Image (cartoon, rainbow, N blue to C red):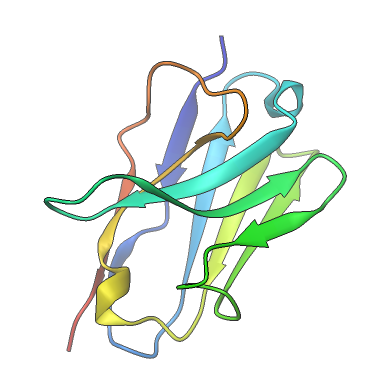
Amino acid sequence: QVQFVESGGGLVQPGGSLRLSCAASGSIFSIYVMGWYRQAPGKQRELVASITSTGSTNYADSVKGRFTISRNYAERTVYLQMNSLKPEDTAVYYCNGVVTKISSWGQGTQVTVSS
């Protein structure tokens, strides 16, 4: 069973950048479409970026042009480069499959954008 561990979050000022990592304990490539999700307090978890095994990407309108998702096959890791961060990006960020999800979510990594 594939398990994910998210890391790289932290406190950053508006306009700053962070690079999130999602490490897989198993074969991440058994999941065709991987995604980064986020959940702010009191809100539903939302998909913000996705990537297929062939490298095709999609982004939510709220992050388009600022976030970049990538996949490293050798390291079995999915990354999310976040630039020009805004306070509304504050949330816990998770990774998981999109079409195919594992039932147990990781702990996520907290991203806080504040002055």
